Length: 305
Image (cartoon, rainbow, N blue to C red):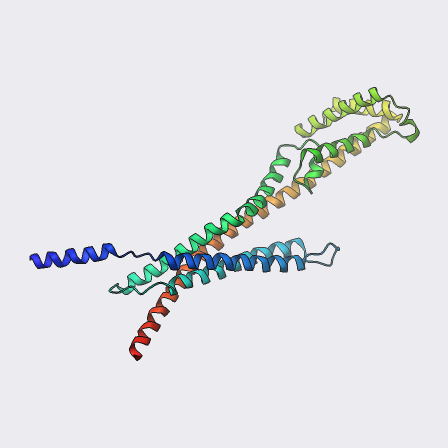
């Protein structure tokens, strides 16, 4: 009875002193996966730049470019995960007196850990670029939803910086007070012109925030335009209506651009998540394959000696 307990105690002691994790192969596989990801990303950047062109109709469409980029990111993840997992399984030492199922589990765990470490390295190197791209979509959507104060036309092509918004608003106000006779511009009173411009700007900003121009504000704008430009009241009202229609059209285009950016960011995030999950599976399977081949080749070599 005492010898049996001694044997069990010896077995437990031997099992507890041997680690089931070989960090050397895991780190080697992770670095290999990260390096391969970097090389493939550079290759993808070169291929992507060759697809686009500043000349209309001579390059790939935006949809084609976006789909190609997403597919390439998936390919990069899968190839790098497979190589890193295979090296993690192939480079580990042979586990002696370990059941076959346990060997398979350890190899799979080594591949998963190599994938996890490589992913953390990639996040550290590429995380800022991914965050910037996702943030641009969120910022574009929030700019339109918050009512960008007549900067909606700029939001369709930029991130809606304050300088761009002010410039867009000033341009619309200038077009509103453009005299019918250009010679009258030099004779305009600077003080009254500045006051009229300030009032019109505040009306347009408040209207953009509210989503519509009230009848009183529209009538007052028409009076300001008629007084400052020499147009008739009917022509001034027509100019105001044309400007408001132009602003609404610009806002609609900005909303469409923001919605496209939001959808692109969401699609990229979902596809990236799916790719990472499949990459983890590939890394584990590749590590199990590499470990099995390592044990089989060692067994075959020892049999020939």
